[in-house]
Image 1 (cartoon, rainbow, N blue to C red):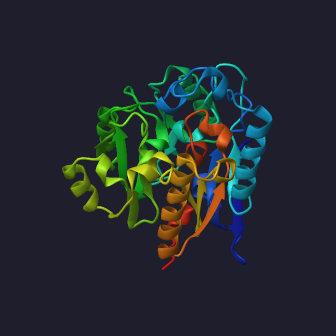
Image 2: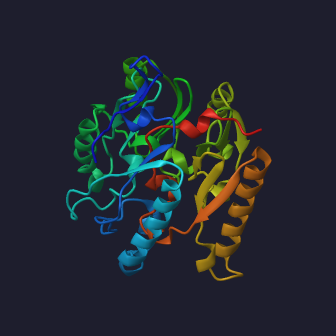
Image 3: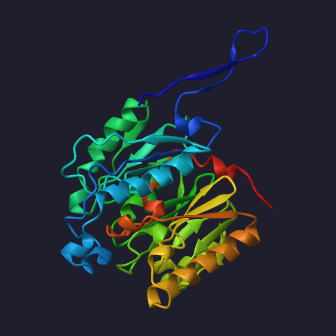
Length: 324
């Protein structure tokens, strides 16, 4: 899909009032996803996958596509959704998890700057070139850091030029030092030490420009104090983080999260934990004036991923508005 230019002309002047050259500049939410044509779980490259046997890990490809289309359909109902082309079906087992592909830096003038990932995970290293070709075809300027970095899942935008960056498991702190110098931005750096919460989106979710869900017990006291200088923290439990409370996406006044509760047997520990996560997120969403939508993405749990992993923000237009 190629970039288009949209113009609205002012009455009598013949000159465009505004021009949109890419989806980041669009005054509507815009996202990037990838259909699971190349999705496999052949290489167990995270702690969740290592707990499953080879047989348990094999995804049902038909069900995975149905679940992807449910997510795509919901997003596309009120936003622009690009589908990243899959250039081949082998060697790109995690391409469907586009949140790791890179990050769009909206604060940079022109809104056409993308920092692509330099993956730690070996099976993912082929994705960088896929992302580079796609974004450059859309007219974006692309940059790849020399140090390790795994995209938007590791770097969360708060507001203006302020971000939170996770390092330790998959990304390096030096990457954020480089980004601060190169792109005039502030990155609050927090260390990730739990192998099950190996990306930042497992324990941090900016829900508004002022408020951020944070699992405070996962971070050092000085890191929390630094975060509190820039955002109001809504503390969430580690149990809920393990079940994906922070792996959410905001679209307008709706919070999207994944839940496979209807696949779980009532009375089991997994069922109880999922109920608790859903109730905690429902309470937070209700208190802030959000609606909550749950989508079953159980086939992607086999790859150690949840909803936020499958959605890359091309802009954060939804965050321009405060609900209450």
